[in-house]
Image 1 (cartoon, rainbow, N blue to C red):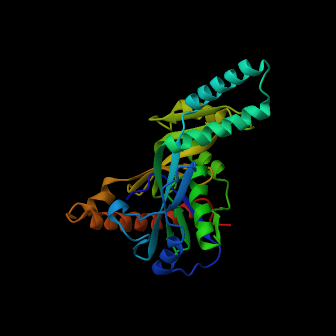
Image 2: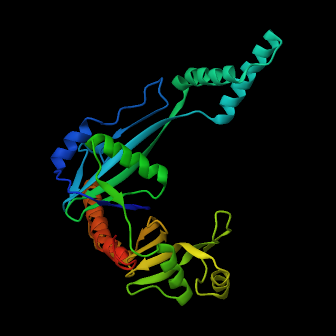
Length: 299
């Protein structure tokens, strides 16, 4: 159980939920397979997977959730071909073009006909609540993935008093200053990945990977006025990640010094899952406040 991406939210008011209370709420929106006539279905599933039964996995006061989403797969090329063929038949019979509204209705009809025969694709999204520290941590950095999970959680709890992080200093400006100086603040070191962008909506974007960020080429981009929007960092030689200007974390990696503490665990898959979750959340509980500090603290 290791998150690969992460978006942090701060609880703006207390959320007094025990694991049992939260599980009862999730049970009302448990995952059910997608019906034949629907394009998708979403609901809560056991974080432990098929062998699990509990909808909430608790460790060290932190509560892990899993949202399962199932979608019918309708290849656009196949659907377009079938619609075009049907339109051609209608035009040959009528001796006149099919109107735009009829085309739209025909497409919806074809989707309805194909859905019962379509294959299903599932994906899982994870998040955990840390009530004592006031965090909601979503295991995704994509807007779609974050919105799917927070939207379902809001529906389940009837409220979601959590807000994206806001810091006092511009994240892009601070990261640009680090790159210009060739070093990050204490406990952090620069990685080998960055994204630089010119000012303005039409500004160019430069993406670098596996490159010396203190090199002349990077300095040239900074001298030309580009600003850092993503930057690879390593924290205390324990966690490597790419931080973006919205404080979303991508390519999250827990390094060997962290994983070595699990080396002697030779138990069931459930015990390993529990140990990994406890270790991951413990490390992130230390990293998150430091991220806020280096950008001037929370607003």
